[in-house]
Length: 326
Image 1 (cartoon, rainbow, N blue to C red):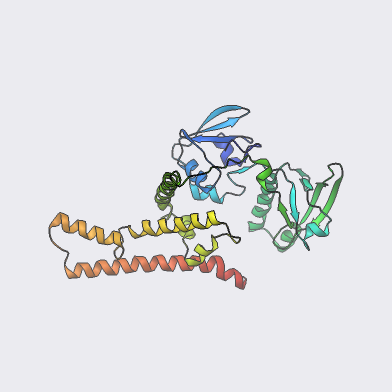
Image 2: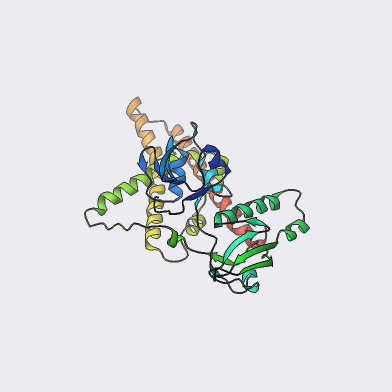
């Protein structure tokens, strides 16, 4: 994490805990942070203390005693934390409002509707306010149309010329640009593994994935956790559009771990349910009656059926209904 030269920016919830813009988290409960990912949100949600690098010195931040909700952290808008990346445009897509306004690749956004911005996180904060206005019950069609009209101050790639542009965003409130990649602002460390050293590294990574997934099971029984359950459609959607061998095999391994953990849950019909019956027989010295076994099987089928309905129902709401405008 020390490789993030410009540090991170934090939302109001993170600042309330003690984080400050520019901080670079370096360790959680004494364990060095290896990288920025969703797993970091999990670690932060369970952390007791976090050390950050602030103005060249390490500062300790005490986390809330009752912990944080990881799902809420992931869904926060603006994000709980994000790398500080300058608001430089990496690509202008043809036929978009940005292209029609003459914005060039390499330009930098300086302000939106009079609000100064230095980074893409600042831009996201402004967009989050707009999204809250759109979600308001008092937002009319006229209001939503007005929110598409924005005024930008853009610094051209020459670093000298500033343009003030009045732009109408797309119906999805998009400008039509791709952000500059963070590669130029992050110092990466390349690690080579030999055939022997890759085995313990793989075991360590697998164990982290397993313990993390077991930890996340507590969210399944929450309303937000239940909404995140999905079927094969959700599984397919999490794979990247472009081939990335590391992400592909990491997701494949994660799905295998998920299936393994699900299989050992004490639900009748799964291996975990059979283990519970065997433990009952070992402790009592006799088998359950046929009537009891019948009820156990019916209960197991009911639980599995309910989970399947929940998974397919969530996928229909997320992926199918939007195709028909719902």
